[in-house]
Length: 344
Image (cartoon, rainbow, N blue to C red; front, side, top):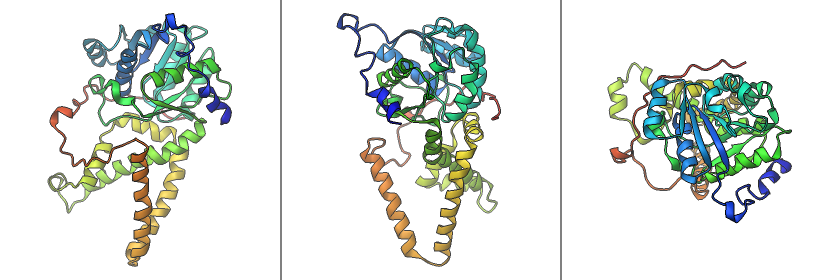
């Protein structure tokens, strides 16, 4: 772990440039495969910081690709990942986790010997297992996970500030080439993110706790509320309190992406879900037996987690009662769900 983090302690490639060449971009050509929320935000952030001379965008959804072109998100637009990856210094798969293998298979024949391949998925072990065997130089694979997002999707949903002061986790394999890791780290720092390096297994366990399980709970509780026969749908909507509205926002996330997350990180999710079920059963017993002291202790301890998140700058203490002006709301997604590969 220390060796991995030491890669980031070295001077960034941007800082090593000659002052006279300081305006030279980090990459000559970056290919972004998939132009949804993350892909479109990344294109905007790369352009904002001048990190690439060319931004080639690929999406198999013709409507999404046309919209990206209308928004001017790239310098070229392609119907296939292979077309975008030609002559690219960096290819980033911004697709559901289950689609990373097919993307790797498609781009492999056109990749240069020095091209770096990365992704943005919320599961990292599966991405490495899918992509590495298919790439001509798997040592140039640097998986990444920007821990940022909203419940919206599509090219219109992205914005350049999405990654500002958020974490991007890199999970390079043990034999990854150092310069590839450094350059991907420099890209994400240039996009405004903080960068951390860890193993893929550790990442998948941590994110199962902090992201995957909360989404699973949100999907389940919203579905339960909708299915309760004694409460009509209109009452669920009419009397929704702040906590339930928070769950509905999370449960509005892209279903294809989250289906793939659970299928491809099932071991870690099931491990964490087992622990959660035990803790939930303990709360159930406390309520049944009127153990107010245990309930108070649990609620006090968990309240401190919220304060820690705010102190870390990952959220604000500003009240949010779902009353933000409509102008802040992102447009509804325009592209249909993407079918992705099944987990192996």
